[in-house]
Amino acid sequence: MADLAISASFSQQKTGSNQTPTAANPKQLNVNQVGDKVIKDTITVLGTDIALDLGSIVSVGWCWFQNLLNSGPPPSPVMGGIGQGGTPGSTVYTYVVVANFADGSKSVSAATQTVTGAAVLNSTNYNILSWPSVGATTYDIYRTSSGGTPATLGKIASTAGLTYNDQGAAGDGAAIPAVINSNFPIGIGIVSGTYPTKAEAGDYFPVKWNAAAIHVKALGPPVNLTNFQYIVAEA
Image 1: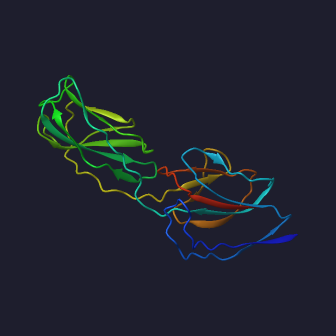
Image 2: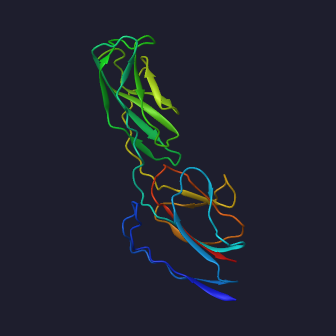
Image 3: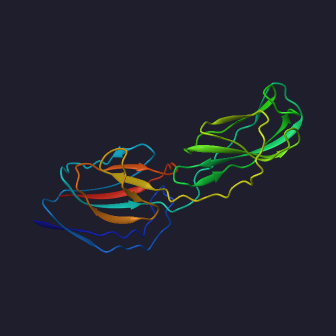
């Protein structure tokens, strides 16, 4: 029976990652194992379940998982130009979109203004807002200035879509919320859709696995960065 020593010193910055160099140096993990099959890989985990490539490993033994990211703000929506439905006017309105992510984090767009809004917003003459997806579950729309009717400010709507028509919804008076950073959690489990183990930003840990497959999925904001490293040894 071979003795596998797994040790790691995460002191380098991963290419394409937002990880800053760290002096983290966890203790060596000594694993009694049969054979010498070990696989190590560094991948990008997005919001769709994937099964880790285990190479020729059939029976999974000890694993080492690391989330390579740091906590930080999630991606912000970027509004395009505000259009008009009906007859444009010369009234100024300003809007902000807040993105709400599955892990509780939030991001806030820059304020976007139109100077061609109708004096009175209604179902005939209205402002058309749009933004590309940033992977949020919902988006809150705030009217932050109004030169016409309605004059109320604050949150005017929440939607899971990527467009909103302001047809005169009343503002609730709420202030724009602060950005809430994400720990960019990655769920880990034995089957797709169930992730009892979670690796948050900067986490690294060994796990004795008792299943034939390892499934992972990003549970927070999507990132196009290398965000996950794993080492898997044959049992």
